[in-house]
Length: 431
Image 1: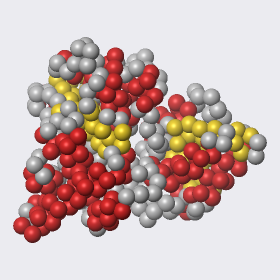
Image 2: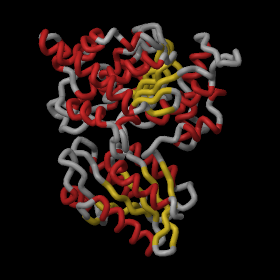
Image 3: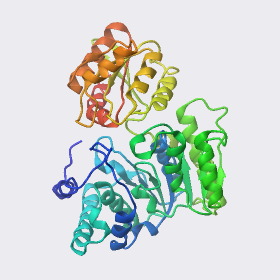
Image 4: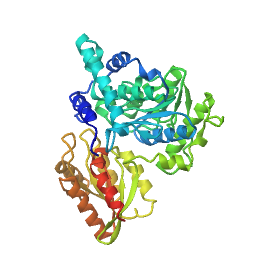
């Protein structure tokens, strides 16, 4: 989606000169809170102007955050949400009361952050090393402060303990789940990754996680909570079948905690899971997260799903949910791009088990090449195709699906979804 405001184009031009680990190989990534702490101090510590819920996890953190935002808004509470990554427009990362920030407002907040960076460079303080994400995070918190939000739902970017967002003094933290991702940064085991994500838990606060104590990752979170006297809440997932149901359970548990902290809705009732009604669920649907459309192709309807799942257990959960939905029975065709730091063999094995045939495409240098992906697929007996151009790959997937009665999914990367989503939306409107 094209940026319209010249001032934001200029701010992003300056921002893009900084290190952006979302667009670069992360093997040499160095992370720490010193730059964002110095940067925030120069801006008046805007993160202290609101109370917060901090959300980490391998899968579901964006959807859970959106549910919390919708619930708080329904309570009449002024709320901001900070998210990453964006799918089509950078403004998706900052919303106030359910509305994405205006381009002009985001631009001015970014320039304040960039000005603080320049001052730090001249004085040789920690913020001179601020990254793209540090500046954007500080800008988001400035926007929340200036908008007067009472609560912010803050999603981590990478991990948690050393993530730029971890300067918030959260009342409630959430760890939705733990899978093997970003292992070159966070660790090679689920326990090591859990240690990083558990770093968002604040002393004597509350942490919500569905991970059980006998799970290796759950044990790490429980240990950390006990060490810093944080209360641990575990929602019951035993009767829940879908991703959406589990996200609702986690968000509802967090809202119940707010009620116990004395947070009340505009009508005087204590905040709680009751705030997440059907309307809130609908409002919290995010781009690129289990979106479903019907596309007319040569007179035949083709079911198309968009989900940026980039971890094997994420993709398995998505395909499992889709298998019970209308239009997604039988064979599937996936348009796929997978970043170099992701578990490509694991993702391909999930596709093989679910009868999904991939078409590999190319989106950036940070991704595995389509030829490399095809070689990996061949090793496990998974038939595949290579089409370098994403638009052409999508066209071929639709053509094959219409001819065979299959369905289509765009997956492996939110970046890929963002490249193709506008086209999918346009074609769906013709149905």
